[in-house]
Amino acid sequence: MMKPIAANEHEQGFLEYLEDIIGTERFKKPLELLNLKVEELSAMWAEKVENISIKMYSFIKILYFLEKSC
Image (cartoon, rainbow, N blue to C red; front, top):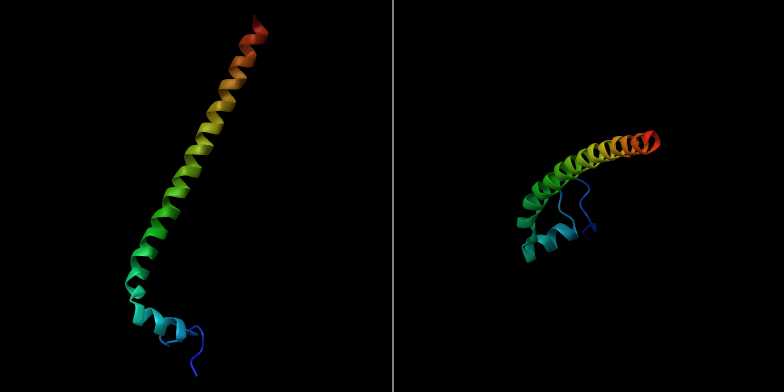
């Protein structure tokens, strides 16, 4: 009897067997590459959000100072 999922990459479980029959194995590598790209873009997005937050905080401080001085 086959295990549901392989214990390591070199064995084949029932899920991998079905993937071979259906042909979904060909999507594994492109999906891994896309996942890496998503992680990279998420990191860039977080950096830009942090940068915008810092600039907004500085802008609000300047507005507060100008309002107080008038």
